[in-house]
Length: 418
Image (tube, one colour):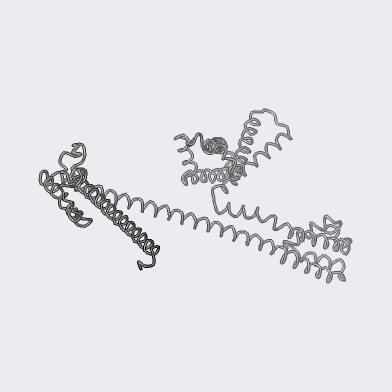
């Protein structure tokens, strides 16, 4: 969540968020759920419960307090994002039921006389404690994948369930029609027949139907064997295997998605590591350059006056090199004395001698001034060349005009003059 461009997390909330997301916290809550399951198992043993009922009750309330504390920390850390996860909603539902069960249990224990209806209600809420063990799903990723896969498989299994019920209905009508009088307890009506055939899908005592029919009416024994064989093949070996195929296919897809997520996460982490490594290398290189520059500056500072002498000699040699390469003023009939004042080489002493500048910058200033003077001089020479070329062009144009005028006057003169 953002507020004015800044994160709205306080330091304590950030600490709580990291705590509830940590593996240590999840393992601790998982251990509490396991301990609570063991406690409920011990309470189911009458001999143990009679001896340690008080201690069991105290431990149960402590574990309940841990559940409430865990839920409160998650609500504080996630706030409105708490409802974005279905597993958080599931945990809140289980903890709410447990709180309600504990409140009812405490209230009924304080009552002196309990009616049978209230006692039955007490037993129902006491049985709801077993739902706390289901919370282990929220902390085991593999179980979460399986549960999510089963839920996503329900739409795909809808057509298979419809086919199973249709076959069950058809065979229930057949068995009621043929074996109602022989086995009234199994096929007395449509509902009994459907229940008996559903039991037959599990292959539970399927041979008992054959022996009962053969004992009552041997002529119908062969027909019931044929019908049962067809029903078991269709329902048990085909429809049930279709259920398994859909679930296994969806589970494989879910595992593939998890592998792809892990692969993308590893690639992202590897890229982040490479970027950090590259940034660290760049920082090391820049740090080495800065140290090298500082060492050079220290060496220049240590040279003292010798550096100044070299720096003054360098501009003169640089100026001579640039002057000879870009143009010689003497070639145009000009010498250094005839140059404009702004193009004459000037000593660098006294220019930009600011003591606040580093020594190596002050040492480079004469060279820079010499280069600027040489550039200015060569620009002036270029302008002189350009003026000379312009004058030559003007003279040539004037001569051409005179030649054309003379030729025209000669052609227009008297014939005797030719």
